[in-house]
Image 1 (cartoon, rainbow, N blue to C red):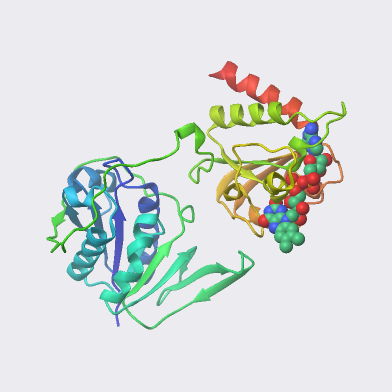
Image 2 (spheres, protein in one colour; image 1 turned 135 degrees about the vertical axis):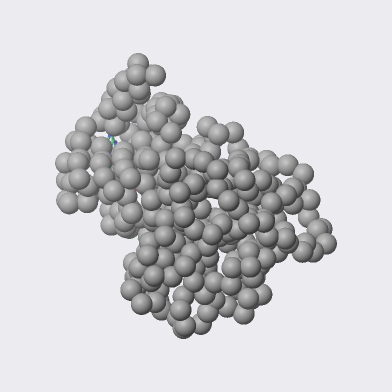
Length: 342
Ligand SMILES: Cc1cc2nc3c(=O)[nH]c(=O)nc-3n(C[C@H](O)[C@H](O)[C@H](O)COP(=O)(O)OP(=O)(O)OC[C@H]3O[C@@H](n4cnc5c(N)ncnc54)[C@H](O)[C@@H]3O)c2cc1C
């Protein structure tokens, strides 16, 4: 059966523009469409698709949109209905969508409604005649390659696996798709979120900054400097916009009654039993670089580490550059330079 592709996209939170993950999915769709020689359609869910579609100018494909107040906020009933309407209008065999919380919430239901199938956490879509996708299993240690004959096939793409589609913004023709909304039982009364500088996990950041247990260990003067460590790390995060990761030892310390950095939780933990974030650059500080930690760095491009130990794991081939130095001194100098640059 000839393939046809629908890329489902949505506006970013509190924004009229398409989310970055949506633009990455557009790139994946364009590449797949060219390889399979299959037609591609883009579906937009937003309050006002005319504005949202501006970031797709020049994409040269059919664009469908659902718009209106019910689609301003992510909500299961309205988003599932919108996705279904877009799919029925485009009638695709392959549906690509970002692995955003908004899409992840409704995509399985969409597969059910379309009598199709779904794969999530997809990291690449290859294949010349029909799609062949990959995703990681068992804590990113086994890469699985999957093909399926069932259609439609919904694929949720991990953020950061494709570059975001970019173009000169401009007007673009969008076909409006009507959505039959079910009775809406959920109304969104507001959003409660931590202040921007309290939110230390930033998946879109260019850089991952990892704090290791060394920050709260006795330093050469025989004393612990945990509060100074916290100040240095937070100042760096504020000035650089980096995302904060941690080693397991550091986040476990709270439970062991040892000095802690109060802004760290297990959600920050990177590694085999933590997360595997994607950032172009990473800097590990006061961290030994043991394998169960470094396995979480699989998708970090340029890896650097600051450790007092010239024999640490990073120095044994796990980092591109290792600074054998005192992280307190280095980070305080880096912060000073960032301040003077600002
Ligand atoms: C099944 C299993 C799963 C695991 N999963 C994970 C995981 O998901 N993530 C994870 O991180 N770990 C994981 N671990 C633990 C991992 O093996 C290490 O124990 C942990 O990563 C060590 O943390 P660390 O490097 O911060 O601490 P440490 O090993 O204590 O290293 C601290 C480092 O800081 C350096 N240092 C101290 N002071 C300074 C200073 N002033 N300047 C510069 N450097 C300084 C020291 O030289 C030392 O190298 C797992 C272990 C097991 C067994």
